[in-house]
Length: 77
Image 1 (cartoon, rainbow, N blue to C red):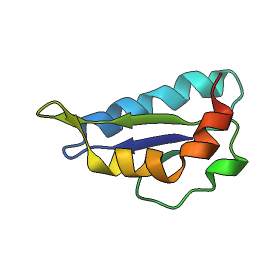
Image 2: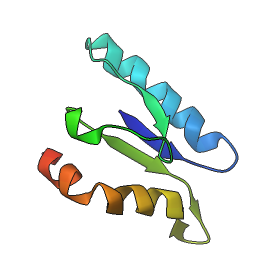
Image 3: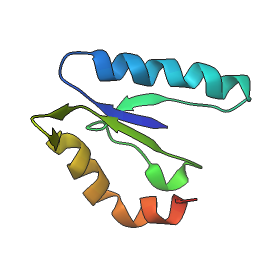
C-alpha cells in the first residue's frame, strides 16, 4: 500500500507513478489517501508519502503514522 496526503495533487501524482514499477515485479499495490481506513496489519509493506508545507509534514500523515506506529514498526526492514 502507498498511503499519501497532499493538497494540490502533485504528491498523489508521484504516488500513482510508483505502483507501475512495483507491479512489474508482480506485487499488488494500492494507492490510498492516509485518511482512508486501511487494514495496515494485513499488508506486507507500506510506503508513506506526504506533502511538506512551510517545513512541516501534513498533519494527516503524522496522524496516520501515530495511529499505526506499532504495526509500522513491525514492518520495518
